[in-house]
Image (tube, rainbow, N blue to C red; front, side, top):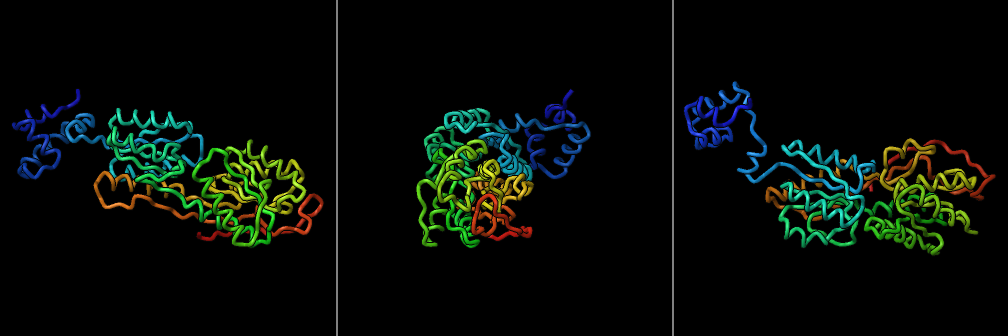
Length: 353
């Protein structure tokens, strides 16, 4: 049977409260008494109950994490970063999916509150600042990671989407491309808004305009991006380069380009955003903006720890990305279409944004 504090108190000849204080390292207990109690606890195999301890300390040392879906490889690395930092500070984590639904996201946050978690981290939140009324209700610290709701939130960590897109588009411009299209997301996400803003800024700074026909929007997944990109390939002045909202969209664009007999990068340069695990495995390997996914997770968890400890904090943290130049981008050919090829040497360089 499990050894209890009552058993240790009987063996040590002291009160229950003395045992409890000694096991917590309280300075109120004489050193020799504390050592004797700790020795008895060790010899009898006593294990403290996390539930009982939480009733006394009002802390569970558990963090709730909400992600859109665990099937997304991006979320997997972010959660790994959160868990790494949480474990280093004696916290465990509970993971839940929101399925990218705002109502479900709020429901999960309330369920975490019922489970008495010490704090909550929400990745790719669809709710954003609408959490403010809920925070008053549940009274639990909450941090948003890559908030997708176009609004401010008191505690948040995110990639600098604007600068990342700006540098990716500048890379295409530096190669000599002038007809550059954008494949975005149609959900009105903050990340898409900021990435499109960076794309437009790079184009306007180069003295270039773009027509509405050169902008299409999918859902961040390959199938929809492939479908929407058909309109770009049907244009009379077809783009020589496409900057995609994310790597999943770039994957769809490259697949559709192949169906139209277009080789990447000979006929079309393609750049993405995220640097998911498959980006360097594609043929050609994908030029993209790397999000430091584990670092984002670590920073979000550290921010939450600082909030819990009452430490001075910077409420909004922006993490810089990194432009990873691979083989999917190259200078445009004179005739960027089927029948015109170009011999290129492999490239794989990185530049800090």
